Length: 196
Image 1 (cartoon, rainbow, N blue to C red):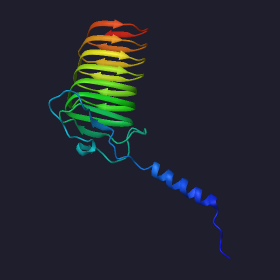
Image 2 (cartoon, rainbow, N blue to C red; image 1 turned 90 degrees about the horizontal axis):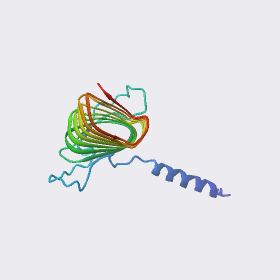
Image 3 (cartoon, helix red, strand yellow; image 1 turned 135 degrees about the vertical axis):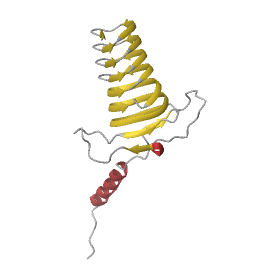
Image 4 (cartoon, rainbow, N blue to C red; image 1 turned 180 degrees about the vertical axis):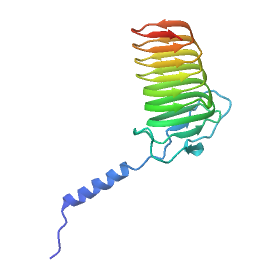
């Protein structure tokens, strides 16, 4: 007598295969050039083509961050859209947009004019920067000098070794440290400007 297969078994198999396909890793890179930035130089960079891993060993920080990736901006404006990861950007990066949460982005080896941070718990180390815009909570920026700073959010920390040209804050509990701080427009509460 032939065995009858349960329709529930077929449904379970279909759900299991669908779940595996949905969990397949994406091939889209979290780092990509921006389009329409008005720059005269176009770059065909598609993300991981110019990216190499620094180290394939286990993470030494003990957290869940991915292995740090190096990215050469190659003269293009770049967007980093990821979470719980570390990046090191190099080369000429006219504008860097960072979107996501729990990111560490090293820009000391990059030449950049503008940094736009959209998210929470983003840590950025940079050199001389013309402008930084922060929207989100609990972000941190360390830089050599900064032309202008715009903060829309709360509990952000900005530490500048040199001069901060101007500061606009729309949020609460933000701290800005610099050797010199220019004009400040603070429409929030409990924000601190400290001159070192």
